[in-house]
Length: 269
Image 1 (cartoon, one colour):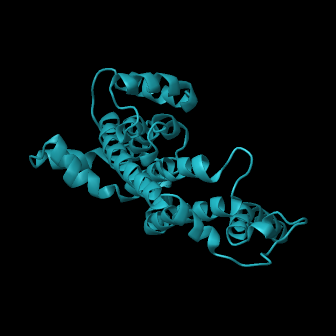
Image 2 (spheres, rainbow, N blue to C red):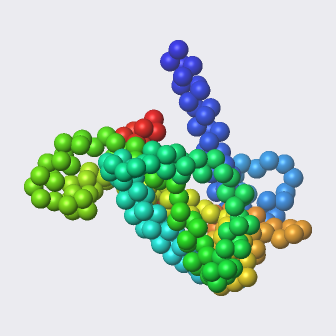
Image 3 (cartoon, rainbow, N blue to C red):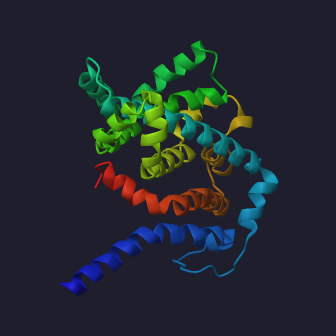
């Protein structure tokens, strides 16, 4: 059975790693190699022009700056709100707590595409359309993080909170001084998932920022400039996508020792 497990593991690894390898292959291949007949598993003519050309012809640095700004702001707002709401649903007693949590949880069943039109009209009514806040505010209203935080805080012993309150600490002081230091695994999961989701976001930012090219993020910039109606610069597209992966990889490496623990303690095993 060991050889069977090893075979399955190798096959799964190859299947999952092949898209990344194909991205690398395309990013370092010339246009002639990309359109050459037959299957090439290694570039015949190695080039880095696919990385240089987009930065010379398009404001790619601005795209990355916009993506970073939006992702960081959304992550900060979302994580703070998720922690506070999750703690309230897990440890505070108030009327209608479970019913309200079920209502919020049920919104996860609504596809994001179904609320794009209402969000569009709301952003226009609030005079946010075409600006960064039109993207930030809706994206920061994430319910999944509330569920994740609640599941984590349910595992925190009530005796620990009661001991802090007996020492004279209020609810907020208890949360900041006692509960929050225990949340490093949860913070790692929330930060990584939120940042990654917003860094890769495409649908709503495309709608909210379509009238302002100066605020384009990387995914919108790729589709709007590098990908044409009749032809596309696949080498440049893959090169920019490859660069786009690097912040996510760096963030995961920074939080990896807390990530698995956070998922396990939140009940997502």
